[in-house]
Length: 547
Figure 1: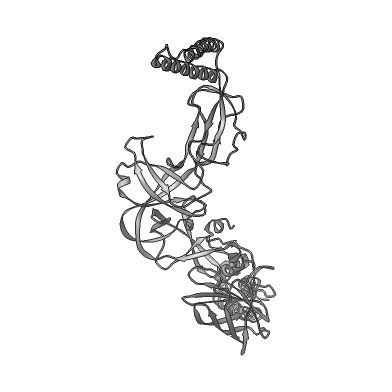
Figure 2: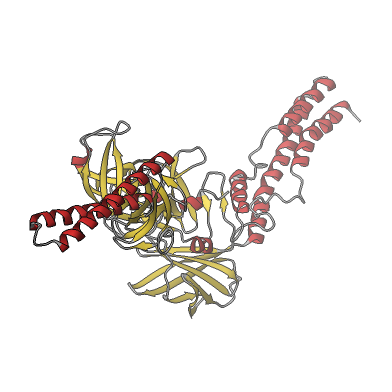
């Protein structure tokens, strides 16, 4: 065989073989198919200004509907729903609050299936329409293979043509030179990227397939971009609620640290009037939380005297008793001699005897008798600081009494003029907020701050004296701003404040925000949100934990 023919065959092989290897058939290149067990069932989202409806085709003959209020995400109960799909009109059956079931003719044909819902609620009637799309994996795969096969054949033909041209052009060249050039060109074409082999947009299909494969029906998941997928049943279980952010007037707010104190007009301290030894009252020591009446005996205080003090009192008592005996004898003699003794002398003798009698009683009480300790006001025993037999000093606190329905709050303000700017105040508790009434502010610094006192205007059994609390005050002056509840803002993984925006029925997107406190337990948004955004107002702390 002549050398030009050999050169031609070698060049053709060098050009065609790399393309033939890369264009082989029999391998599945369809990346849009989700991984086994992954992906979501066919679903459709419908919404109006009042309602948001998610429909999930759980089986070919059953459509599950989740009906919520659009603004608040609260489940809609006792709704009447008619569904028209596949040429059939069916009534929905309620399964749980906000969850309904519709029995359908079996939907198996791929493509769009128009869906019309008529929803009747207590607030009115809503008509919603959309399309439920059933995918067709087999048709998509055939189309993909066809689109990918044409470029492969075209490149093979082009390689054969180039080989022919090179063979004719290099007939007069030496064989080694022609063959080397053909091999070099063939390897270059075989290794270079070709649009036909890239299957046109396969990269986008791969990303879509990965995102779809990440989600599993009914399982919450945080996606790579931070978006949280939370199924509707889980939202209902967690009580997730949203609020539409609106522009409105807000009043500057400020948080103050404070503590609960007893109402000075409804509580009191029971202190020892003198040094002595404590023993229980007639009914024993009152237990914590027991109600006591004003004047009720809570304990007895026995004198606690040293030996010299007791000896001195005993001597005084003996002398007083002797003087009392003489005085009483004198009164008795004068009573027998009324004619010879003036009336004034008899009265003086009686007065002296009465005084001595009182002195004797006082000395006996100081030596023997215990003094009763009484409650100064009615209330509840908040603390008890004594045991039987305990020796206490004069003025030492034995009991504290409080009225559980009346409390004050003492907060610390680091601006001297702050009290004059306070328009309203609230006591912030874990599950509610109590109104406060400003009583006044001190003029003497305590820990570099002025104490400001408020009275709690609503009864709260969960309050205790010295309990640390947070007081939110509203100051004078209003402005326009976007606002949202405090519970809507949580800390993200980087420690910065974020909120979750309800982008679609089951997707929540984190937004980093800048906020500041305002009145009414809300936060003014400086940056990060737009008017009309639906923000998670209850349950954001649970969303941030989804991984």
